[in-house]
Amino acid sequence: MSDDLLDQLVVLYRTAARETAAPQMDDRVLRYARQREFRGLGIGAIGLGLALAASMLLWVSMPRDPGVALASPVAMDMTSAAPGYSEGRTQSYLMQMDVRPPDSPVAQYLRQHTP
Image (cartoon, rainbow, N blue to C red; front, side, top):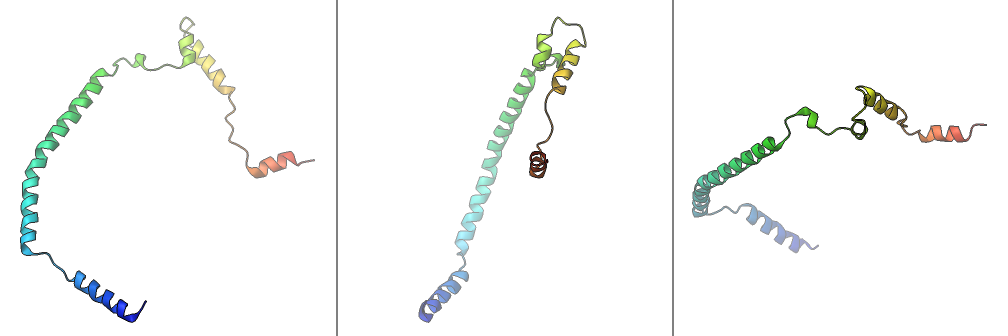
């Protein structure tokens, strides 16, 4: 890059940095902001009303009885069983599951290469 080109770029940068908007432009922006200030209030109130109505609709449509909540598949199969039987069956099923964390690479290596 030549020095003349660099000097021109510096001059352009400095003139652009000192630029200010005309006072008429500031007045326009402030006037437009004051006009928009009251228009947005109506849309916000409508949006808030719709959000509240949707929330109420969801709340009313939810089941009230805690017994209506989703039950486990094991408990659903055991509707005619004695009370407490399905809980014990579920517990024994869960106890059979392999829930150990996976072995680290070092533990796997030692387990495979021990004499």
